[in-house]
Image (cartoon, rainbow, N blue to C red; front, side, top):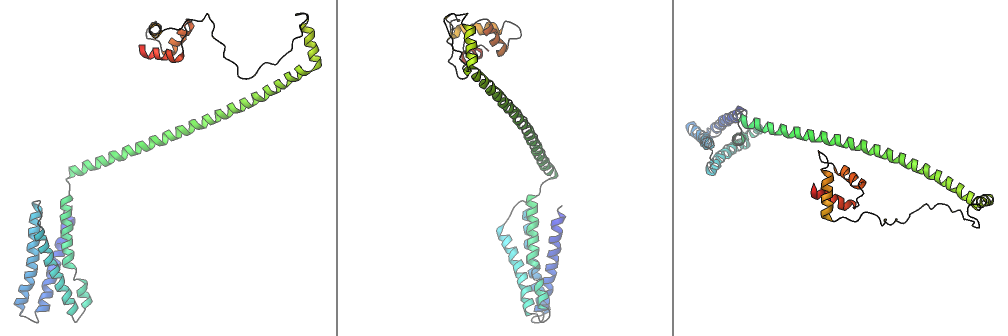
Length: 285
């Protein structure tokens, strides 16, 4: 994995150094002796290579020096400037020389990419742990999506069944109301008929002489609550109610549920509101 970033950087560095030395030799060789041009070219490449080597040493130690980095980029810019100046003053193919003038900057950029890769590189164990965490998260998300889809389908089925049942109940209620309305109309017609009135009078007169009762239809509507009988069981206190609920609950093993206890409580003739009975159940249970 390391070779994927370091090999392109090394190749680009070698090409840019050779190109810089060649350009300096061709460009300055006509103005100064060739040994001087060679020294200038080697100086540029040597400074570039020295700062690069020092940067790599610091990177291997986990350190970084901005001054060294700035000097290295200065040598890279200087080499690129030499190539650009030669391309602008060249008599033959200036465009081709200008096209390769970016190689020193590209080499520095590749070394920068390689250093960033080294700073963020992880061991295979860490990478396996990260992949395991990501896979676990994907599995949990897939399970959650499947659960939500299943719950949505179940809820849709339930709502459909409830809607259909409600529609059937509404139809039955409508038919029942229509039947009751017809029966009510029949009873009203019978009550208002003259022959029916005389027939009822003839039937009731022998039973209760001197009385002509009026046959009224039964009331169909809200009715008043019937008052409790005076003989009803007296209201129990909270303590007495708790004792009674506890006795009924533990009358068999295992203890009775609330529904069974309430049924036996009512069957025994005791009286208590549902709220008080539930409160007593919570206190003893």
